[in-house]
Image (tube, rainbow, N blue to C red; front, side):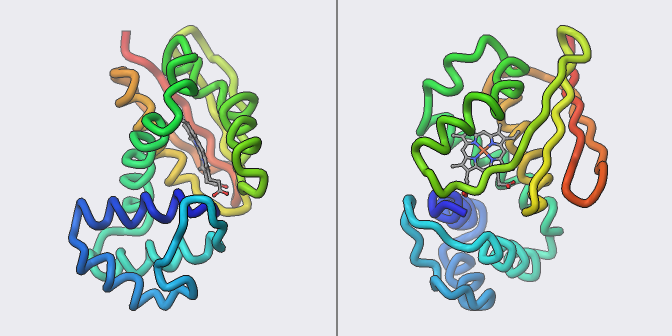
Length: 178
Ligand code: HEM
């Protein structure tokens, strides 16, 4: 997992909790990098799981809810860092349907060792998109937060439903209001 994801996670922890909380979770999770992440470095995604578990133990917030909140936060950073990705799309559903064949393809060019999930998308109607997330790393909750972040970004009110299909896949249905 790329360092940018870790540095953003720790920045969110600092903003939402405190710098002491950042130090506490790095210490208690016993991660081998000791929290010294660089944006372009690559680290095991297990380190992310350990940091999230440590934060969950300190805050009594479920790991899944922490990942959703992180995804929502992360979208703001990614959309600021890569404005052309979000500005090229005509609306939020167009954007979400382009992750697999455009966004993450561009990400792979920037970071050849990125570990990216797979997305299959299909329009159910002009205002409803089905997006199936598949990844060995089981970050469906992170994907959920990123979708919510995208809805925030495009100022769209919508309903997000999710269904866990099997171990590695989650089906999201995004329905826009009006
Ligand atoms: C501006 C838009 C986006 C950019 C620049 C971007 C970039 C990235 C990057 C750099 C990673 C890390 C890869 C690694 O650590 O090796 C990543 C992973 C991931 N992305 Fe995206 N992404 C974007 C939008 C989205 C959206 C909207 C979703 C959800 C629908 C999404 C879902 C994920 C997930 C869940 C992962 C974690 C890896 C996994 O689950 O296997 N991304 N993305």
